[in-house]
Length: 202
Ligand code: MN3
Image (cartoon, rainbow, N blue to C red):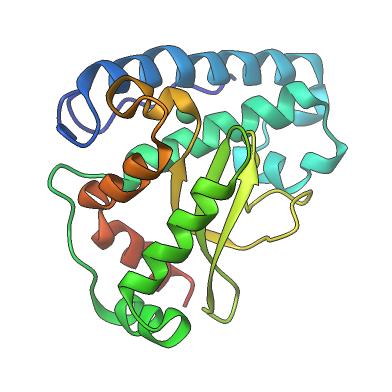
């Protein structure tokens, strides 16, 4: 049984003007598909991985070759990323809004720290908002397709929000201006989804 490319949960142009349709089409249909296909190659080569969930594989990624680490991360990260965004975005609510006040001193501070992590990630990678088991929030970044579910990363936790800072995510609209992309991206963040993920921690 192979992993399948999850469908984009909205049309290619749904996130315009923040993210253009051509970027979404290539990002999903080419990049995300390639991670999915290569993850399947890695799983085919290792019967010990067959039947495991992607989360299980990420949790033991330190034992895996780069093929599985890079493409297992890319497979999971992009599925998570699509579901983190929504046409028109949404606003924070409930427990999450309180935790943002408590742990960052407000949404503007969170954004500033998150954008700083994204801009400061040398080369390709991701910026993350994660929570630990007690619900404390933290902003982190990872290189390449690593993520906070991997046993090999320094800052582990439950991912609530992640932004792809690979050039393929923004270059057509923003060219080399990663900071402008990071700033604009908040317009399409689905905070209802982020709040649901936070509530699920308990
Ligand atoms: Mn990407």
